[in-house]
Length: 400
Image 1 (spheres, helix red, strand yellow):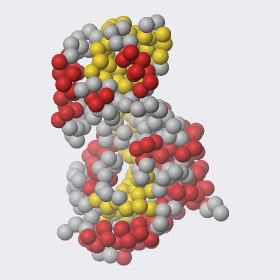
Image 2 (cartoon, one colour):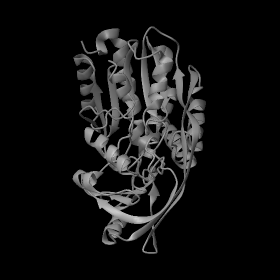
Image 3 (cartoon, helix red, strand yellow):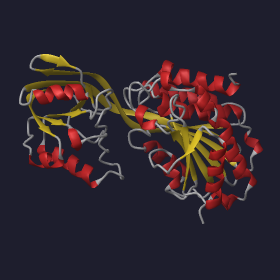
Image 4 (cartoon, one colour):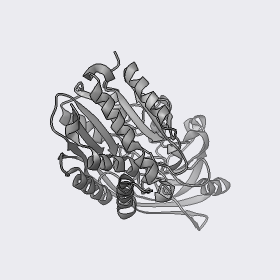
């Protein structure tokens, strides 16, 4: 039997994924999502705040790739500048090959072990020394353009996504990468059409009555380019919206803050804006952060973990997970908005899918792989966590 909450979540998912679609920060889709979230947060018991901030607004206008006069599919990497290049390719698959390659004026074909996942942005403080070295070499060697190759067949995930990286680049599938390798030395034509300007986006906040302490419940509404973002992260936003519709904020001895972050996917500048408006890094009044990112996959159970939490709070969350047979306890993971809180001493609980990375950031992350029933089952679990926090003294959740 379908519950009311399940129907509400299905409606939220339909609007975010099918009616709006891809929602990168600064895009019209992202602004539509912000308006929608704000309309739900404006319900009884909540006051809203729209934290607007600037971000690049990049538009992909099409990419053309020609190999020996034949046309092949290619996808401009996020924030790539436009180009029209006709040049020889130089293939590099290892860091050693990149260090010795002559790339000036040529198209660098990057494949194999050199770039198996998206390259971290230059400003991302968690990027590795190896990534720093790759970025430095590419900028120093001045290729006319880059073509990055997906490591396995199937989908295509853009492999460079940095508005501070100014070399034109596109990603191709593993199959087309094979064609380029077989045509080694051939003259390749790459045309990227794109535009970029200063845009804006916003975090959307829903708050209950002000108290000495608060609990933050969060998700992010933006997506990568080229994906409708059902799992990542319409599902997490649907949880927030369902909580806004079902919670009675006055039932708790602390304030509740619902935060729908923007720009989580391309540098977490939405988190930076939230902290700036919060007055800085002092989050000592936050009893806990509960983040939902990438839940509700049809073919995989959801997971829960606790980060930087006290032993009693962690034990209580672990026991709660054991009571729900379709939720798995997992090791802490850093990629998402809960890290902004956990790194500043806030006990944080994070929900995701055990198979999140298989769908996240891909064009096929749509409603056919999403389960509103699975998502709806998280609502009572989150309510139980809030009850635990309400039944115990304020310092109970924190690591000593």
